[in-house]
Length: 256
Image (cartoon, rainbow, N blue to C red; front, side, top):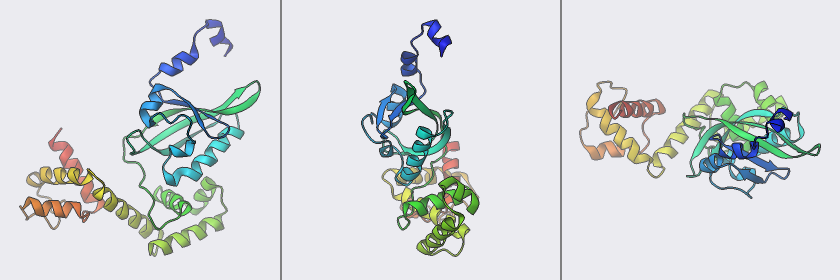
């Protein structure tokens, strides 16, 4: 920092103007400062708790990471998270955060958003799952083992096994793979019924229909030329996740 001081540059002003979202959270978890890039991303949330910005199922994990950055090593940590953006949509980001010091004391956490992922963020939790069970399901979707989940959540292996057993019972699933499939199917159904989402699926289906001969793309509706039937087919959520992704890809190709 002595080199920067000798230059006489206004680093605070530069951080405020740079087009990389940056933020400061105080020791109590309250968001105290956001640069304009961060406010554009999540809105002006100054004065609110950090948990108000993350997805509901990320609340406990966000608190753990914040505490670790506050009390842990000076190097801080890099983590991925799902936040709620300024429009109320879920967004996957990667954040790098370090302890913020003043007079030798840690007064909060300073962080920057390293990356905003273009892929769809992880799905919201199943309504029948507890927040902890939803965390476990999310990690299972990532392919994590029981031991890896235990390390990530700072739990014992046996506690993770108990969460998995309760999660399987809540989802009426017989295996971890089936639980992941159920979670994704439930997410697709909710996404298709979200305001505005149905229109996008209809547009994708209408665009893809004349351009494909792949029966797996539109199973059950390929031969039906009635637009109303297509709307019902798409909006009812009867497409599989893979079929919906194919429709979206066809739509993007057709419309550049």
